[in-house]
Length: 379
Image (cartoon, rainbow, N blue to C red; front, side, top):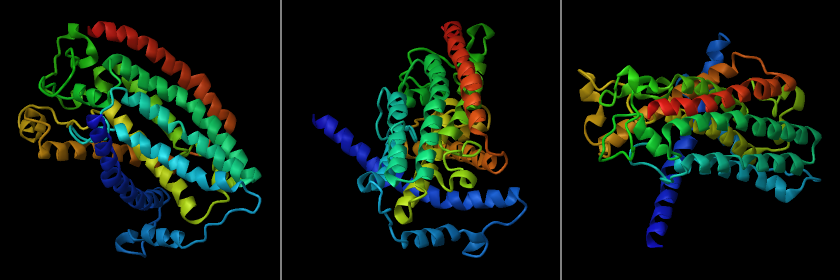
């Protein structure tokens, strides 16, 4: 019991003292970066007036938002209305608890980390329904119904793409998946077998166990997982309500969707949740497919000196460098999400559902089946 209490306290401290401030900082910089990306794509400057190159614009908007009155519609269900944004944010924040941010920095080293994450973040649909129904507004309830239908639908191909990784790696532990994508050190890794053969087939006789780098990333260890990564990325856009899958908000049709009646701090929680979800799925994609906190540099030649995995990853320097690599990979994926938003038009509802049920889900199912045979070739 004492050990469980200490582990729980450690997980809570990680969440409160590191992850939550990190998310808040990311949101402030992320909104500014997205405005700049949108400006670049639309051949304009973006925010320029407040601070250096407009970097203070988001802070100014944040202060303005916090000073707005927290209004509740007269005929709204007050309890549901006030609780909805909190439920959504807490569900998404809880998903960060099992992320291995470095070899040692992890809130909860649960053996079923992926299962927990996919389960807990799916609870945000409850908050979306609460927001739409509690607002007593036709636009809000239409946006909520769209959001729930979209998220539940796209959870299927997303989960199947994750399942293909689980089948090949033979573990639900995100930290174990991270170790398998680097140089396997027996004293730190729990892997029972050597899985670092390029393309996963030992008959090719290309062993990269001591080379590491991008050659041991899952998308290169198995071509099937490259397809899974594409499916995961597309589904993650829908899960985050990001364009071209932003139908639940659809400003030109539903005003602002399920949060049309919100203002001030509670409206800010919805925006905070959206960017937190963007970062969470980017972290998860980097961990599952892009080597996690392992360096992309091969452990050969001059790069050997820059690769901390030649020594102990559990040193302070190893954790700092590992966290830096993971964050840099996640930020690249976030940048791609921003570019996609300002490049592609919004899909219609029928197109959105057709893409999920007629294309992504069948392909993801086929990848899962093929992954079983691929796994047999790796043994």
